[in-house]
Image (cartoon, rainbow, N blue to C red):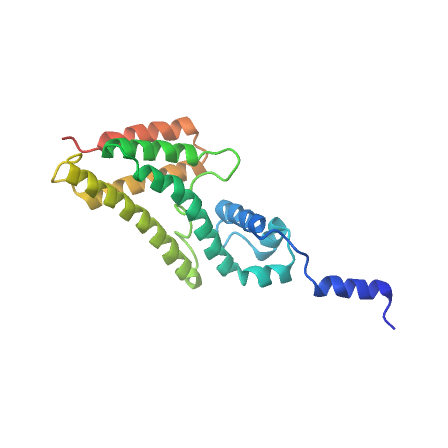
Length: 207
């Protein structure tokens, strides 16, 4: 005969505790951002997200599927300020100065992991995680493509010399932003990043 205590335990196991999916995803983003994909264990995730293993699988499917969702959610946030600045109604140099300045601020918020979740993620990983490396490389490429598109617009409107190598300039500023993200991860202050941004603007093509 099953006791009332055993019956209650069985019901709790069979009915996963409800949770706020958005809050759980935010917790996962912070953990992946701070530790990377391979540095984050399944036990780390369910502890940070405060959910059971069964709830995790029911809601997110797998660790890799959750990571994809976390990257998309992060990009919707980071992409917000990035694209907003690229679409500013200002001359191209001002736009890129604002972009590098904003990056210095965004990468050094005291209430979240330093740097950029995409910039330093999966640059080194095991062979069986090559698809994640490719995913993040694609995200970084899309960032440079967006900058190149804005630079071409500036070239058309006369903000940039006609002989400017657009792809090289976009790659330069993409590398600058990624380098600033690494500096932030290594503990560089906001003031230091702002100075790096200022120096980076000295590479701007002269008219």
